[in-house]
Image (cartoon, rainbow, N blue to C red; front, top):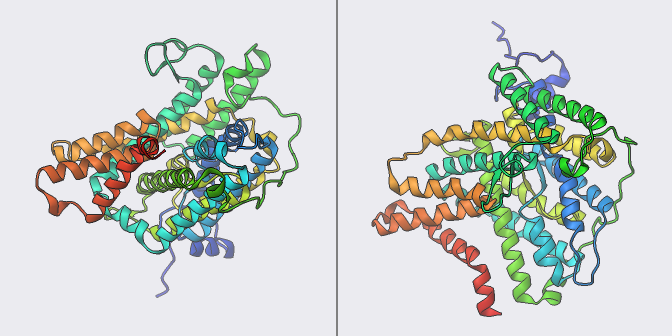
Length: 476
C-alpha cells in the first residue's frame, strides 16, 4: 500500500514545496511556508529599527583622529551584514534567528574602542572577536559552556530575556521613561500623553485581542495596522517629530535609495594594539567577546526553547548556530557595521509561528532589500513595532513555572538572572550574576559534585568582567 506523505496545512503540492520541505524540514517541525514567511516578515519589522539605530549610534562617535562615519555608509553596512548573516543562519543553521548589529556591542566599539584608535582598527577588533568566537564554537568549547549551564538557569535566561525585551518595547514606545527621582516611570512624569503613546497602546491592545483569538498573523497585522494609524495621525495632527523617536511615520518622498558601500572591507586587524596599547586593546577585545558570547547564548537558549528547538535542555543544531553567530561578528566588522549577533527580536517571529531557517531567509532578504528601500523601512515607528516585543515577553514568561522556587540553591540565581537583564539592560549581566550566584551557593553548601567544572571557570571570567573597571585602574 502506498503511504501518503503528510503535508502541513495551507501548502500547495509541487516541486518547490518539496524542495523547501527537504531543506528546512517544515513537516518535521510542524510548520508551513505561510507561517515561516509570516514569522520572517514579523521579525524583520520588529528588528528593522536597528538599521536606523546603529548608524545613529556609531555616527555620533569620533575616532582618535576625529573622524566620524556617515549615516548612508553605516545604513548600508548594517543592512548588508544583517542580510548575509541572517540568510546564512537560515540556510546552514536552519533556525529562526535573525542576526544584526548588536546593541550591546556597538557602544563598546563607539565609546571604548574608537576614542583610542581609528575606525578601521576598531572594526579590526570586531573581526578578531568573531574569529575567537568561531574558534570556541568549532572546538566545541562554546557548546560545552552552554551545556554546563544548569537547566533551571537556562529557563531563567529565557524568562529574563522576556522581561528584557518587554522593557525594550515599553521604553522604545515611550510608555516607560526615565523619571525624576525614580529610575523609571510611566509616560511623561507618571502619566501617559501624546499620540505616539496612544498608537502604541492601540496596537498593543489590538495585538492582545487578535492573538488571544488565535488569529493567524496577529502580530504582523497589528504592527501594520498601528503603522497605518500612525501615518494618518501624523498627517493630520500637530506632533513634535521628536515625540515619535527615531522614525517619524510619514509617506516617504522616495521609495528607492542607492546603497553606499564605502565602509566595505576597510579593516585593520592588529593596528588597534599599537594605537591604543596592548592593555587597552585587549580589554576592549575581552569586553567584545564576553558581550557577543553571552548575549547570543542567552538569546539562543531563550528564543530557541520558545521555537521548539530544545530537547532535554539542549538546542538542536547548536554547533552550527554558534559558529554562524561567530561568523556574524567577522562579517559585521568586515562590512563596517560592528559585530552581528542573534537578536532578541527573533522572538517576535517565533511568536508568530516561525520554527525553521526559512523564516530567517525571508528576514535576510528583507534586510537586503532595506539597503535599497531605506526610506520605506523608515515608515514603521517604534510605537507600532514595540507592541510585538511586549507580547512576546509575556509569552516567554511561561518558562518561569519550570523553576523550583522553593529550592533556594536555584531560586536566588534564577531571580538574579531574570531581574538583572531588564534592570541593567544587559543579557550578559544577568547570565553572569546567575552563574556566579549558583556556583557560590552550591560551594558554600558543600555540594561540589553539582557544580560543573566549567562553571568555576565561567564564574572567574565573569568576576573579571564585572570588575574590569577596577582592574584597569589598578594596572593603569
